[in-house]
Image 1 (cartoon, rainbow, N blue to C red):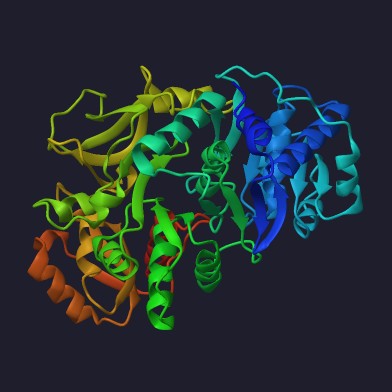
Image 2 (tube, rainbow, N blue to C red):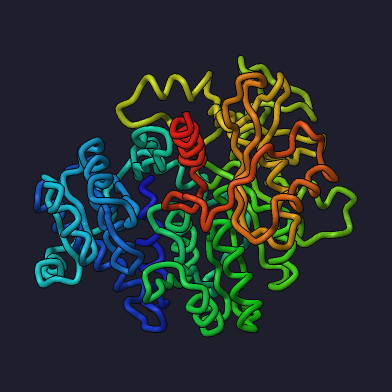
Length: 506
């Protein structure tokens, strides 16, 4: 089934319901949303677009993003969302690799593409030519698509080499959306989803379930993440759900405490992109109250691996509450989850291994990359590359990416464990731990720290909390940590900096 059927049905059943907002301004109700998508689809078909063709979206967060996305699906094509923060050359690679024949852009981003000589047809919103598209004859209904057909071609963040295109099917989108209701939150038509994180990523993947229930979709006027703007919009709309990376949550907490804001109107904050550090989520929940829900997923199984519910995040009565809060919850309804050995053999509860997942939310493979697909999918199981432990009750605790494991003197050291300890210091804002080559020990632990704590204080803290061999042998104090466009720390850049420093000292 074409996932866009959900918009068509909502327009039929309650078309007058408010749908798209830019800030406080209503842009379209559900009938108008449907009609614009149907007319854009009609225009695409008139341009020769065929089912299965790829159409890209290189756009900042705005109502036109959803109109274009559903127009693409109505036409039977597949969307290729590209993060608006990417460089033009990075966007060019995605356009070429995906074979996108057309790309919709918001004003300003067309210039980034023209500078690198993009060959795909560029359609810029907020232009007379764009508005003229909506004079096309509308399609009567979304094109028929099979569940296994491509709907969304998501490109990984590419922290190690060129990004790979994850094929996300209509079945995957449906599975993730329905699991949301079962495992994450009970969204209704009275709610609003606020797009503060890029719609090309996790935030946008939650649009479908909110279309299904007829919720309102709110795009900030800023087009992105601004703490005070979020608080103001939440206070106005009163039942707001947002998707946020952990760094966004910590920034919201800091600003709210500094400005005396309570977060009134924020009903649910779903956080992901890596588990939050224990001290940070405890502080956030203490300030905002029981609004936080954690999910864990990957592009290859988007938003759909595990969930830690609202009640579990705020529960302090369970004897294992700290361990659970430091983890990522239990398997969502649509997937199977297990911990495996390097050969994929299932391991018992309590043993550390690679996180493996299978089910309808898992990708069928990478776009035009059979070698990477065969390395990642083993007998139907997605080998996530993440290391973790399942307890007897099915709660998953992440350790690190397998490539981030530090082996010093034959002992395994998991950076997250060290990072959790360092963040206990009140003057540490952020920290990232990596391994540095050592002639005798193989690797040694190095901590990059954002904050005002002294090296002596941090060393004493580690000595008091963890084994000496796990303690950092060096502290590097920095103004900020390098991050990709989704807020994830780029440990590859930190390791490269250490390698460069070592070379310069020789």
